[in-house]
Image (cartoon, rainbow, N blue to C red; front, side, top):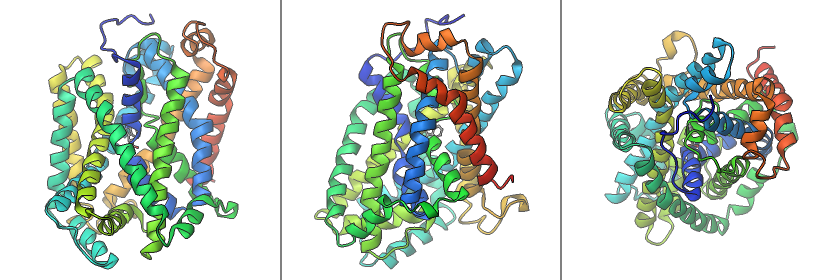
Length: 454
Ligand code: TRP
C-alpha cells in the first residue's frame, strides 16, 4: 500500500522541506501567542514547561506525523484509512479538520490585526507618545465594528490566492525568501531590547523558573502552546510529510524545525519582556500584549516607521505561510476524500473560515459581552483559541502518538525513520519510548489536572 501515489506533488529541495515546515511552524504562534501565554502564566515557569513539552512530546509527535504522512502519501483521513484496521481512527481526522478550521478562523483575525498595524505604520498612525495611548489605540481598533472584520477577510483573500496556486510554486518559493528576512529583523530587535533599562527585569521574568508557579493551568497552557507552535496534532505536518521525498531525513527535519521554531519564540520573548518592564506594562494582559508593546519599541528606534512597516509586513507573511499549511489539511481532505476539485475545495475552506473568522473578529466589538451561547463564560475568539489549541491539538497528538507507538508496524516505523536503514538514527529508541509511553501519559495527566477533570 505504501507510497502508491507517486504522482503526488513533492518538495523540490532539502532546503525547501525545512523552509516550508519552518514556515508552517513559525508564525503568530511564536511572536504573538508565545509572549502572551508566557506573560499570563508566570514567565520562567511557563518556559520550562514549554521546553519540556517540545522535547518530550513535540519532537516525537512531529516525527510520527512525518512518518505517517510520507508513508501513506495521503491526507490525515486517507492515512488512517490505509494504516489502521479500525475505522474509528478516522476520528483523528475529524478532530484535525475541526481544529484546523477553528484555528484558521481566529488566527485570521490576529493576522488581520497585523495588517491593520502594517497599514498604520505606512500611514504614520502609530505615532503616539505614551504607552497609554497605544493601549487605547489597540482597544479602540479591536472593539470597533468594521475594521477587524475587514482585515480578517482581506487576509483570508490573500490566503486563498496563494493556496489556489498549488503546493510547490506558491508555498515553497515564498517561504524560502521570507523566513530568513524575518529571522534577521528579530535579531536586530533583540539587540535593541537587550540595551533597554528594563532588560534585566524582563530577562529575569522569562528565564528564572519559579517552580512553585507551575500549576495545572501553566501546564495545560504550555502543552497547548507547544502543539500550536509546532503545528501539531491536526495533520498539518502529516500533510506536509506526504510531500517529502524518500530520502528526506525525518528525525533531522523534525529537530531542525522544532529548534528554529523554539528559537524564534524565545527571541520574541527577549524582544517583548525587556520592553514590558521598561514601559511599565503588565506582562499578563493577554492577546493584546505584543500589539501594544511593539509600537512603543519601534517608536524609540531611529526610522521607527520603517522598522515597524517592515516588521508587520514580515509578520503578515509568516502568518500566511502558517495559514496555508492549515488550509492544506481540509483542502487535501476535500479533494482526496470527497473528490472535489482543488479550486472548489479551496473556496469551501475560505468560505468556512470567512464565516467563523468574522464571528471571531466580532467577539470584541458587536459580540462583546455575549458569551458562547451562554454556555461558557468566554467569547467566541477565546473559546476557539482555547478549545482548539489546548484541547483538540493535544488530543489529536495523543492519538497520533498512541497509533504510531502501539499500532503501527514497528518495521514500517523503523524504515521510515532510518530511510530503509540507510541512515543511523541514534534517538530511535527514545522516540519510540516517547510515542509509546511519555506522550500519552503526560498528555493524559495534563488533561486530567489541567481541565479539572479530577
Ligand atoms: N504553528 C503556527 C504558528 O505558530 C500556526 C499553525 C500552522 C498551526 N498550522 C497549524 C497550529 C496547525 C496548529 C495546527 O503560528
